[in-house]
Image 1: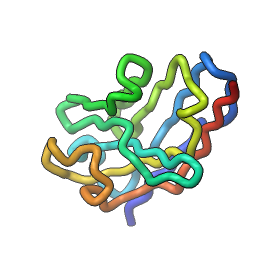
Image 2 (image 1 turned 45 degrees about the vertical axis):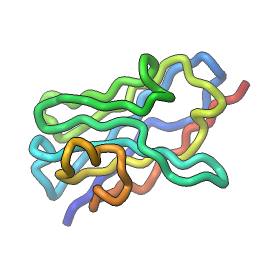
Image 3 (image 1 turned 135 degrees about the vertical axis):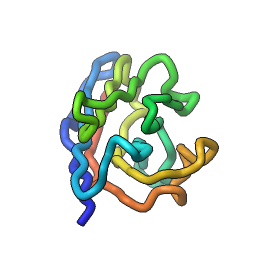
Image 4 (image 1 turned 30 degrees about the vertical axis):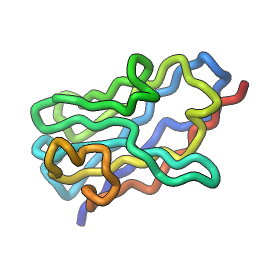
Amino acid sequence: QVQLVESGGGSVQAGGSLRLSCSASGITASSYCMAWFRQAPRKERVGVGAIDSDDSTVYADSVKGRFTISRGNAKKTQYLQMHNLKPEDTGLYYCAADRPFPSWWLQIAAFSYWGQGNQVTVSS
């Protein structure tokens, strides 16, 4: 059974930092693309960034230069380091895993496995 467990969300003021973690079990995470998505209140879920099995990454334009995705040494855990947070970064953040083509790394439909979601709230 595949499980993705997220942790590390919370509340922060604008300009602050948070780090989210996603721990994978039931899959060989090192051979999967691991991605982050977020869903703001009353909006659709959108891709934030992804890291592939070779550690190549892609980011949404809205977070480039502020967010960084990385993997732990055993590659079972991935991290989303968020700096210079803005109120518009507020939302539920989801971890996802699958093996999509690179052009699909930020597409919801490309991912089969999902975490439960973790709330990030940024106040102005």
